[in-house]
View 1 (cartoon, rainbow, N blue to C red):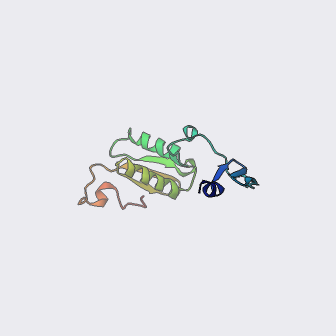
View 2 (view 1 turned 45 degrees about the vertical axis):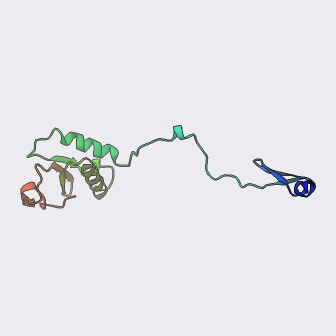
View 3 (view 1 turned 135 degrees about the horizontal axis):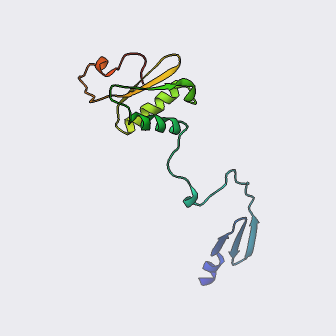
Length: 138
């Protein structure tokens, strides 16, 4: 009975490129062809955390300067200083202001992007009293 069991016991050892199988009948060696990896691996401690999006610099600068602007004033930013389409920067500003729970409004003309803080926003407030709806806004 023991001899019968020993005939069917197989030990498998998997190496990186060779499979070695030990059986009661002998050793079987099979070369495993591996494809070359497409991507490099790195230690997880070296993986950057957080996201620095394409518009982070301009959006951070606008929001920082907006802190120092009086409530009744707006920032006037030349469109050629945005570094991207005004629509993309306005979208990024909108996402950032919502994330910070800081209501802002924007408007544009042919040369400038205007950004201002909305003071005491209320769901029942007249949008025109906050400057919303006067021009195109984000």
